[in-house]
Each structure stands twice: as C-alpha cells, then as structure tokens.
Image 1 (cartoon, rainbow, N blue to C red):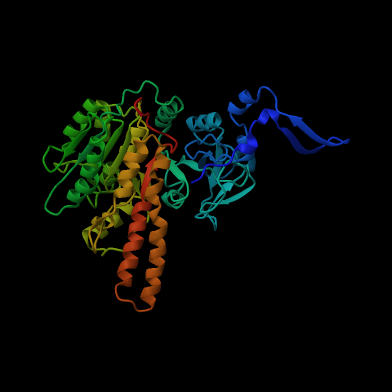
Image 2: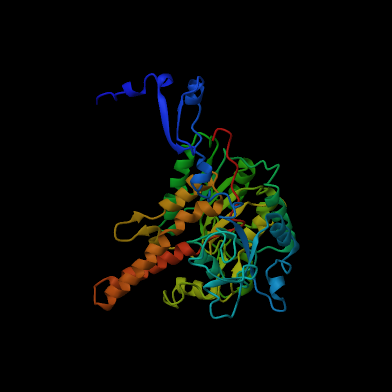
Length: 472
C-alpha cells in the first residue's frame, strides 16, 4: 500500500483556509492559530452522548427503560386509585414498592383475558404479557417482575407465561418472612458471611437406573467440574452420591462448614405418602436424601443461615405444586407417575415448604430456583441420540449467577428454548395430521420439554445478584 500524499497539508501554518461561511460582506477565510498543536492532540469531542442513543443495560433495573414492578391479585372492594398502588399488600411489600418506586400491576382472576394480560391501573390499560413494550412508562411492562402472592392468588401459569419474555420471581411468605426477606433485600444482605469461594453441590445417586444417576451426571458432576476449574472457587465441594454419604446430616454439616453463596442439589422431591394429603402437603417437594429420608428445611435453618445464598434444587415439586398438573392426561392414571400427578394436584396450587423456610429465615436466602412439576429423564437427554439438554441450565448457574448477573437475567437463556419447542410442537402436529410416522411422538416430546422448562421457577426477587470476589 502506498503512503498518502501529505504534501498539500504542509506547512499548515502557512496555509490560508477558506470556509463555506458568508459574513454578509464576503466569504470567511483565515490562518491557523499558533496553538494548533495543543488543539490537534486533544480528544475529539463529538458529543456522542447527545447524538447516539445509549442502549439500556438490562442488568440495571433502576433504568426506567428496564424497570421493576410487582404483580398483585386484584382484590374486590378497591377502587382504581387503590388498585394502582400496593396499599392492600403486606407492609414489607408496601415498603419495597415505596423504596423502589415500583410499578404495581394486577392479575385479574375470572376475567376473559386473565391468562394474557395484566392490568396497569396507573398507566390506564391492560398489558399483553407476551409482547408489551418494556419499561416503566404508561402501558409498558417492566423487565423485572416480582409476584407478591401465592400461586392460589396469582397462578404459576402467569409466571410461566412471562418467563420467556421477562425476568420473574415470586415471594409467597408470611409477614414475618416477608419482613426478613425485604429487610435483607433493601440492605443488600449486608454483613453476610457466605463465601463465593465455597460453592456446594450435593447430588444423590440411588443407582440402578434411577433418574438420580442422570441428574448427578449431567447437572451435579458437570457443574462441579466448571466450578472446580474456577480460580476464585478454591474451596468448592461436591458431595457425590455415587461415592459419598448424601444424608440430610451430611448436607447440613457441609452447608454450615462451607457457608456457600451457591448451593446446587439434585435429588428426588417428596410427593408421598400417596393417599395422605396432610403428610403430602407438609413434606411437599422436600429433598430426598441418600437414605430416602426428607431433608427438613427447619432443621437446615436451625443449623445454618442461608445468609444471601442462591439455591438451585433439581427435585420434583421443590418449588411447589399446581392444579391441574401441566402433564394431566399424559401418563396412565393407574401408573406411579399418573398417581403422583393426580394426588399432588389435588393438594391445590401452592409454594413448597423448603423455599418458604429458606427465603423467610432471619438471614434469608437470596433466591431459590426449583420446579413446580416433576422432571423426566427424556427432558434432560434427547432420547434418539441421548444428547445432554442441560447445558443452558449449567450456564445459567455458573456463567450467569456466578458471573454476578441478576438471578432473573441469568435464567433467561434457559427459557429461550421454550418458544422453539412450542413451534416444533405445532409443526409436528401438522405433520401428524398429514400422516407422518413418528410425528405425534415428537409433538408430545416437544410439548413436555417446553413445559418442563416453563415449570422451573424463581422464588425471590429477580433483581438479586451474588457479590463477586475482588479478583473478578
């Protein structure tokens, strides 16, 4: 490449410059100043901040283009002004809305569009949850949303519908638990002694073809390998159920010793004894240890302070239960899975006791991620080729949560596949109607796998993020 010809620029001090400006009496001409050097080496201020729009940071919920809001049930007897505020919510929720200047949205049960819209009384209309503009303005839906209600008041399906397009969490606690959680949230879990360096993974493995083996391999073991390779996680621990004691006592002792900021558990979740509704409700979704005994969350909290940790529990109903089950009609009613789905659903929509205990503790958990339904071996591993389908989940936990992203934002990539799976479901049904062999199987698989991801929910505020070590 030849060098540019700069002869016409030298010497500048001797050049006459003509501008395309007219003074009224003639064109403007002039010579360069003696300070040309100082001007030339200075930065060129083009006023970029004024000329080029700056994209909103999706991690910054305080930006009105991003936003944070709360979803409450529409209760009878309140006028429009009251429904635009959170006056009917428990005091800790009212305080949170005041401090954050959050948008208050209402779920309207028993209305024709209840499953599709939220009412924005302050903004003057309904918001279509699947595609409303993002933000805090009128008729806009914030990116971060906290459901402050039980699933009996605001159904799980509202959260599941919003998960692919917004970052959604839920708090379903008594007033004392809410006070504990909101106080910790507003102070950023100040004084927490939980350690980034010591993540804990606990994976039960009952062997013999039990699904716990698969969960230990594709979630527990694989995630631990990534955590162990991180130079900031020098004292992480993997309690491997294929070789170690995975009793409730072992988990409790490890939590107290490790004081982890990230806890990951894989196990069965308790859904029995079938035929005893009171016992089923009491123990719903509790982790089942290596000795097939439940892990009592109250015993956990008495021996260990959650203290701002984030807990992911891969276990049936670890987050709660729904009525009816999303899988109602998929399994034979007289089989074990069919009976579990029927009897758990008969308990009604509810949040499980483990996250309620951990999130409402005096030094509470930051967030709990769990399931409202069971998961299945074939939703974690594609049956035709046994491809592992949990990579996005592991990335959400390690790259997202351990990368310091808000937990709701970290989980977003895990929900991305829901849309593609449901599109695939629709196309497979078209193929089935055309007589294509195997199309119904693929439609069933696509729908079940989409629902599996949709039933993975966040409990806690979606804006929370774990603090990163200084080296990060």
